[in-house]
Structures are given as structure tokens and as C-alpha cells.
Length: 83
Image (cartoon, rainbow, N blue to C red; front, side, top):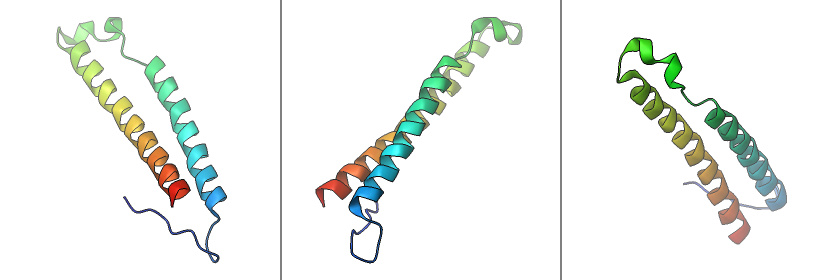
């Protein structure tokens, strides 16, 4: 993961960290909203027995992707703070 270099001609440490915190909070909110949009078996049973399981697995993958991005942003913010 590339960590930005804080220097006089660049973005300040505080601003870099704040941008990452803001982005992480937005993703956390999106993740909460996405989790509420989980598949409901009533919407999938006409497609057959395995449909809800596939939909749930796909939903879990989407949630994991968002969670992974949020984790990366947090790691970046920590690395900038510690630099």
C-alpha cells in the first residue's frame, strides 16, 4: 500500500487523515445501508432452492469488499499519523 509523503509542498498530515476518516465514515454508512438490504428468501424462492443461498453469498461478498476498503483507509490514516 502506497503511503503519501507528508511534506511542505503537499497536503498537510491533518488534511490527509481527515480525508481518509471522512471517506471511511462514508463507507461505514454505505456498509450499514447495504447490510439492511440483505436478500430475503421470499424474493428468491421462485428461482429454486439454491437461489437464496447464492444471493446471500453474493451479498456477503459485496459487504466484504466495502469492509475491505474501509479497513484500507483506516490503515492509511494510521500510517500517515505514525509517519
